[in-house]
Image (tube, rainbow, N blue to C red):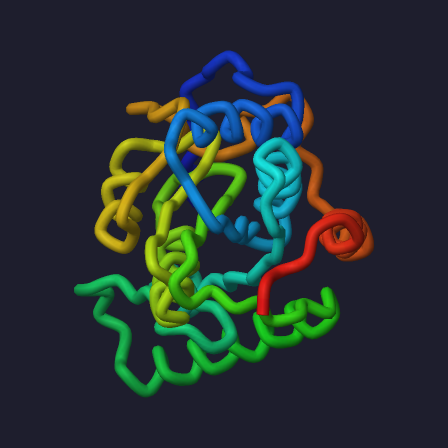
Length: 220
């Protein structure tokens, strides 16, 4: 049997942790004239970044889960529980298989949304900043932006501290604007950009959301 080893190009870490990435992202966003903001973190990791953005900008914070849509070992897209999915073209997977794995991913997203007790916020006519901790393929953030667009929000801004340029190009097709302080030609995994990049427990993510909920509430 022949084994293949993937060589990942080394890059120096850009941030100590997700909170530091969030502060850098908030600084980039602060230079723009943005009114009536809602910050949406992509659960789980994106919420840690989004919480810092919301804190620095004095904005409302919420979250949405985006799940991978996988057909076996092949990733064919990403989806939220209720928004339009983002599915790739030319994957060669039969439609009935895609429908099955898409439904499974939607159920998983709905389950996490429920466990995080996400209260719906009105996004109509507001500026929605969708935040993730990083972009490689862009599928996750693109799906989150499609979800935001479907809420009839006035403007969708995709924001991430670090991203690969081809993935950011994919996201740009779904957002009105992209804010990314570090757009890189070469990065293989998001964790390369952080000194500390541990998986986040649900209780921790729920705590971040509750902290902001206690200070600022949405209009409506």
